[in-house]
Length: 76
Image 1 (cartoon, rainbow, N blue to C red):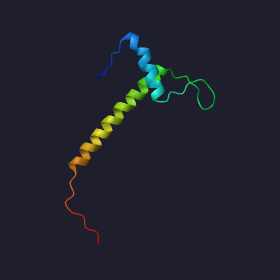
Image 2 (tube, helix red, strand yellow):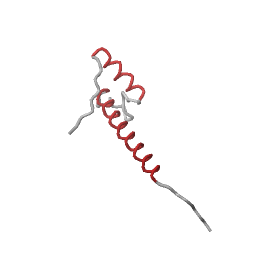
Image 3 (tube, rainbow, N blue to C red):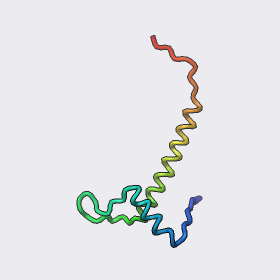
Image 4 (tube, helix red, strand yellow):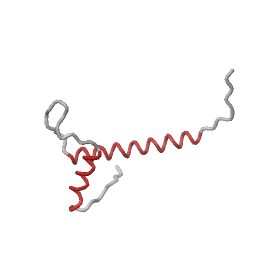
């Protein structure tokens, strides 16, 4: 399977994961009070995947909408 990869320097990786986990709402503690078993890195990887899917869907929807033309609508 083809891969999309993102390369970040070792010195910036922690900063990037910390920043993205804060911006995307990583919960350190779950609603039930338990510690989150998902690491920040796993959370960020999941969110990046969701973001890519969302962007593809938005693009495809826009393309589909642009392909539709309505010449006249009559309601009587």
